Length: 259
Image: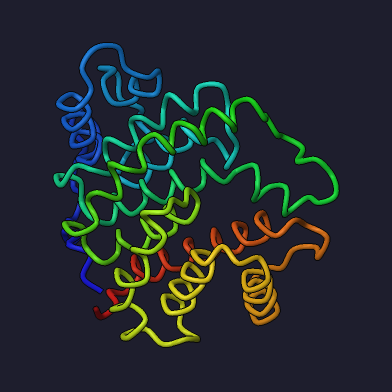
């Protein structure tokens, strides 16, 4: 699948501004966010560069961890998601990084459900309900702008947007998913990572609890990490969807798929 991502270029030196992706993110945020910025923006604008940022990946790992640390929400997470949303809608950001940005928004919005599914019936050890609720609301506020880009987005980012759409279902977005994902279902059969992911998104879009439970159990019994059967249906489904989105992203990064 064409992601419109530029091929990786060899890194010979790191200048005083840090890795190229840091410079690009800084330019995008400077253009898109006027006035006070979230505290995580200091990683983009501070003059001192961490010597460990010897390439794009090392910087990205630290930058995203500063916003959603080890897949947990903290008090500043909701503010930092404004940075991620701004990056996700800017065409200067390569497609693979827009995909990652939308994926991080998905993870932030579903932390509470996914962790509940993992630890049921115990309470997630590092749960912060207040921060999780604020992060979810922050993502929800950006969803209309993100989904409005569907027709202009590359296929890879559309896959991530589809997952976000079923996290925040509306009477407008749910019916639109079937025609929007038709090409994927035609070209990626059931039993492939993309094919299974897209079909599961469409099941979630039905909002039919029985169908969702059946699909969740069928897929987890096949080859995904399962959850306790006593877990409520939505957390189980979002836990599975998160796994699937991660695997789709890995596949897109390793080898371009055909669209």
